[in-house]
Amino acid sequence: MTKLPPYPSYTGREPCTADPSALYPRSSETGRPSLARARTETAKEMCSWCPIIHDCLLWGLYRERHGVWGGTTEAERAALRRRAGIRLHSPEAQWDLDHLIIRARKQRAALSETGT
Image (cartoon, rainbow, N blue to C red; front, side, top):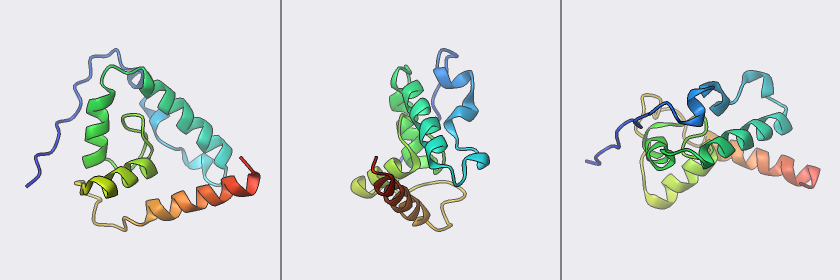
């Protein structure tokens, strides 16, 4: 059995402690990819100078399906899991794992349509 990483030990100096909701997409951004991308980039920037980014990434790989964890998006963590053979261990892990792949493909298609 895989030993799961512990929840990250926050010190209060992490940028996400000021606004944890910044790490999760909002329902108002559904259908507005530029808004969602901007939020994701802001969240990833916050993570880039965080002192516990590696702990958060480990936690996110094994335990989190949604949001930005350790500077990675849902789709990026899904790809890392596939490559590393990591299984998601969360209460919601029973539902369709393919939704992330489908979502990433839709985002990629939307980006190619806009030429960005």
